[in-house]
Image (cartoon, rainbow, N blue to C red; front, side, top):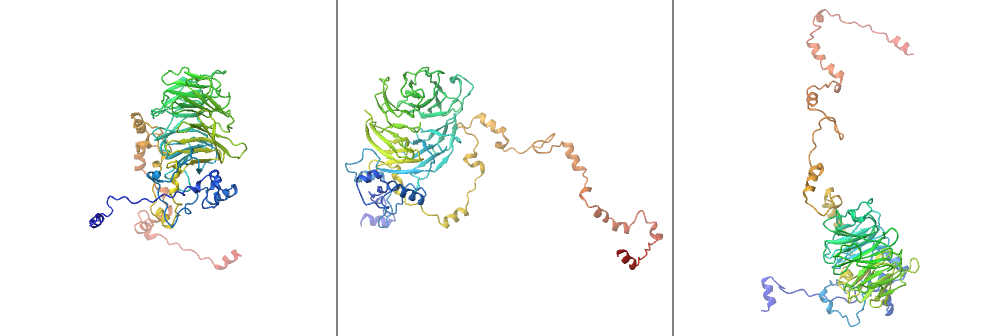
Length: 584
């Protein structure tokens, strides 16, 4: 008897055998292929084989209106013979026909995430590459999850961190469990992975002149950076001419203050960007007066260890400051339309520079590629409403290796090393995810393994109405008391004990005069009001008299003497004629 027959007889058919996986359809990514790539290899154009990115502008607007800004077209055209789309399995990547012509940059396909209404000014991916956090000039922060998104490509959470203030920067911590949001206010905010606020760090006293003596920033924040080794430390830069080092556990005061002194009159300048070196041993800052400074973290931060005056044109806003992987090279993206590379061992002059990169937004950044061989930055559109460019340059001499056109001016660029995908935020509010089916992993590729959203049936609605969720107001996150991350302290418990609402104390009787809308009364007044209570005003006087009428007729106490000799009244009857005459 075969082994399978034995297993079937025992009722454990298929024990220890994994289900056979379906082969992935290699053409399932063609519908998101970029138009530049498809133009080089001409194929017959069909709506079922091309995505929205390869259609003309007029056709694109019609498609976007019909499908309600759906980021991906329907996958029904890619399914053959009624079979479902097979699930993505990273183990099968080696089995695909990758060939030897795999692209150098993961830019052959794109996915558009449309939900912001204005320029995307802040962008970050968590260390695993599963989630995107974005901020915009429409005051909103949004969280996107590649694994949880459907074909509509919508964020799973959206909120306003600081009211009507632009979002300047967002950074994930190294463990991916929390992220910082830097807006146009003076207070940094810390959120957990799901977007729940954990802390709002204190603001300083604006009337103190010496910035070392204030507990927090007194000027508009510009950027932030996490310590590469310690996930409890981060730095923030501000317009108050300081870079402050914070501890996540202490939101009441910063740990250290770095006061940046300018050589201009007034000795103050706006710090535009800040960064940690990969080993955490150096902090860099670039200022509005064009200076570039470096401090060793082991120093007392009185003066910078390395400094370059006039690194960029004075008065222009430098968008980013990035260290290379080896920690020896620093790259700055200036508001003077340049990208410059600096060697920390010879810091007086830049290694190389690339100009003629139009900068339309001060938050425009530049990044190193994961292999540390290329540099990527965005170049603004030449005319209003025109297309922008992503510039891929060599790191050694900043020669342009590749120019990629995108739908609008790219502001923020992020190249994730694990999923090998380039994410860029555009000036029209879109987030463009560039990837390659051969060299990228997960990320935007996960969406192509899901079918179109299932239509809601009447059974779904009836189930939702039959068992509604009951939520008490104070169970919702927005009504939770306290915004700190340190809980359970003795002082907080004592303060909550004195709060009648939190301690659920019943209302005490009011003694003395009334207060809070309650009428007060003493103990004696309370007793007297219950003993002597006049109810005559509550009764009908006629009813009160008539209840004694029968008693007075049966047993008259005061008129019993008249009972025998009381004369009977005799009334004269008036004639009817006289009444009629009077009426007439």
